[in-house]
Amino acid sequence: MTAMGNPFQPTADRADKQTAGNRHACRSGAALANYSSSPSCERLCGWGGARNRSDRTSDGLTDSQVAAIIEAAAFALATGRTFQRHWTIHYGKAGIGPRDGARFVSHVLALASKQARREGGELTALWVRERASDKGEHVHILLHLPAAMRLHGRTRRWIEAAGGRWQPGVGCVRIIGGRLSKIEADRDTHRTANAANVARYLLKAASPETGERLALTRAGCGGRIVGKRCGWTQNIGSKARGVVSSL
Image (cartoon, rainbow, N blue to C red):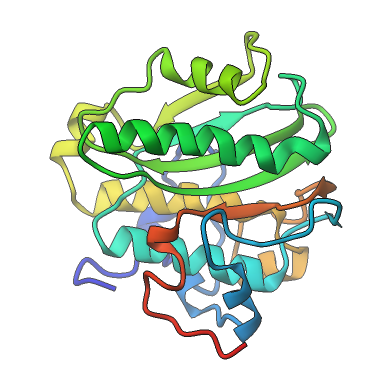
C-alpha cells in the first residue's frame, strides 16, 4: 500500500460514508487487508477472473475468491486506478439467461475496454454476478476509465451489442464519491475511501462467517449463479501484481 494508508481499513471516519452500493454503516472489526488468501486464489488470475466451468453453479463467493477480489481492488487503488464508476446491469431483465451471464459480462467489458483504448487509456474493472429474488440476475461492475471518457449513451449500445434487450431499469451507472469532474481533480483519501467502500459492497456474496470476520455490513446474499461469478481485468490480476502461483 502507498502512504495514503489502507483504504480497506473499516475505521470510524469511513464507516458512515454512503456510496452507490452501500447505504449501511460498517461495523467495527477485522480489516479487509488482514484477510489472508490461500494459494488456490491464484487460479482466479487472468482476464475475467475465476475460470469456472460454464455449467458450474455456486451460491456465493468462496474464501479464495473473496481474497482475490480484495487483492485486486487494493492493487488498483494503490496504483492510482481508483474506481470512479459503479455500473449495475440487470441482465436477467434484458433477456440474458443464467448460462449466458458470464459471456454477456465479458462482452460488455470488451466493448468498454475497446473504447477506453480509443481514448488513450485502458479499462480497469472488477465485477461480481449476483441473483436476488426481487431483482433477478445482475452484475455489479467497478470501473476505472480514462478521465475524459463518458458513458452517456454508450452503455445501452454495449448491452444491446452483447445480446441484451434494453428497457428502463436494465442498466445504471453511478459516479463514486461525487461529480466526476470533482473526483478526477481530487485524488485524496476521501475519494479512495468511497471507492473502497463500494468494493466492500461487492463482497456481500461472501459466506456469513467470512462476512463476520471482515466486518462486512452484508453477507450471504449472493444467490445461485451458473458459471463464472466474479472477475477482473488482467491489469490488476495476480500476474500484474507480480504474484507467482505455486499451483
